[in-house]
Length: 159
Image 1: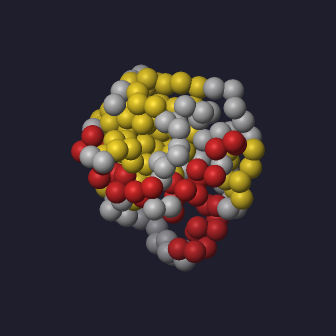
Image 2 (image 1 turned 135 degrees about the horizontal axis):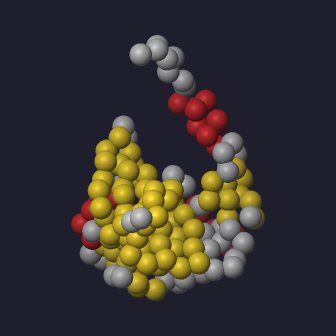
C-alpha cells in the first residue's frame, strides 16, 4: 500500500465545498413528532432494487430516530425552500419543523414542495469514521418541476 499524507481537515472541507451538491433534508418520525436534518452526502445506489445511501453523523439525533423508526425520507430542496437549508442544519432540533409544511407518507414526514422526495426503509447501516452510511430501500418517490437548491463553496444557487 502506498503511503498517503493526511490532509488538514479544513483544507479538505474547502476542497469538497467546491463540488456542487443538491441540498436535501432527511426526515423521519420521533416520539414527539417529525425529526430531520440537512444532508448533502446523498446518492442513488441502485435501480434494482431501487435504493439510496445517506451519510449522517454517527452521534446525530436524526440518525438515532431513523434507526428507531426503521424508515426515512430524503427531500431534495427547491430554490424556494432555501431557508430550510440552514434551519435543518443548525437550528434548534426540537423546533426545526415549527411552521414547516409537511405531510406524512409511509409514516414519515415529507416536504411536499421539494424538487424530489424518496421514502425508504432501512436496509443496512455501516459506520465509517464519524459518519454512518444508511442504505435505504426506496418504497416510493415523487418529483416536481421546481428549480433545485444547490450549494457550492458555501453559497446557495438556483439550478
